[in-house]
Length: 92
Image (cartoon, rainbow, N blue to C red; front, side, top):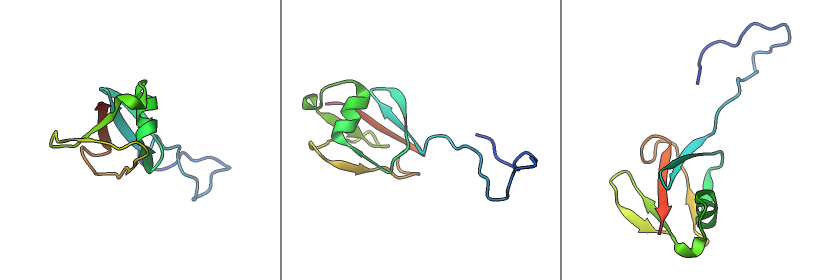
């Protein structure tokens, strides 16, 4: 990600913002997944990980503590939670 001034363009305005990357990076089964929403459900994590939700989803925090998520649970993803913007889940 680059920071700094916008390139001078005749059509640029001070309120122009550069394209931003994804809001969060999730780690699901060891793979980094881009995520742009502030919440994610148990079912969405399983779908992104490529497994059936009936196998379960386990949240792993920055201290390696594990917690099994309930079906339909909504997780609020927050910047700075865990390792920066990375959140980790695995198959249960």
